[in-house]
Length: 357
Image 1 (spheres, rainbow, N blue to C red):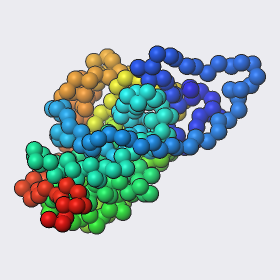
Image 2: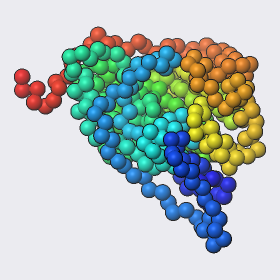
Image 3: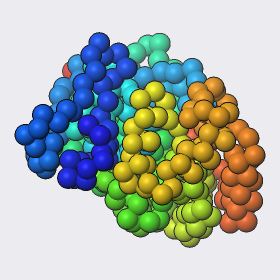
Image 4: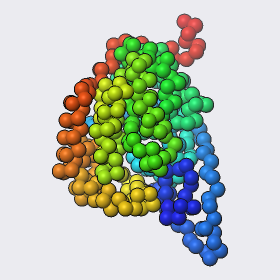
């Protein structure tokens, strides 16, 4: 579904284009049949939940530029609806579209805490910091009801296992009790993503995520509770949000962020066409300039996936962004996040029955 007609876009959703996934044997398109069927507003889209029957909860990677080798994602798909999300193409593995399917057809692991307990208790498991909510946010709106992420944090804290979290949701404040205790033991760190300070842009670009100012309040609340916080300017979008870099860093530092990072906009697979369609619908006067600047950082392409450069890009424009970031973080006194402690790890009981021994 293309986004040219505002009445044919799903209100409260991010995607303006829902292409078939790259593995699909068919391609679908809306066609005007002369009866005005494309003129009627769309019915509101309802989010569905499906059980993810995976037998493990910890995912491992060997990527040299992500800073961790294991992660936990209690949900697949993300209702926040951020149009730029690099994880959208992963819905192709479920034979679903990276467009509206990604933000409305969610999968969850109801036994995630129990699976985690078993994996940590395994004789061959060796402790290293776990990143929570990397592919999609662990604090989905539905997490308020399911509490899977909270259950995971409870197991990690019980096992004295270090972890980090990346989120743009205010729901993380619910778990301040667990996070503060883990931070006291040097077991936890949180990164809060702030893309823009413009509420109007955020509402269109990341429609179901917390408002920008609310995320700054989250940084303040976490910091006040003793939880070390990184502000993550991600993604940084040329022309559209790059001018806000210094303001975001300044306000986040005032709120208590200790460290900072940024990631240049990434457009893998189907996301290239999706983001172009969104720009044409939402920022038509800037669309060509945004993509031209982005290509300046990607060797003339929309995206390059090479390790080491995919996060920051290359070329003069990318170097300028890096210099601005380095100078301003130094001026504001940003430092490094504390190294999390693996020495305290203790294997949890494999299940409730083990508590008898």
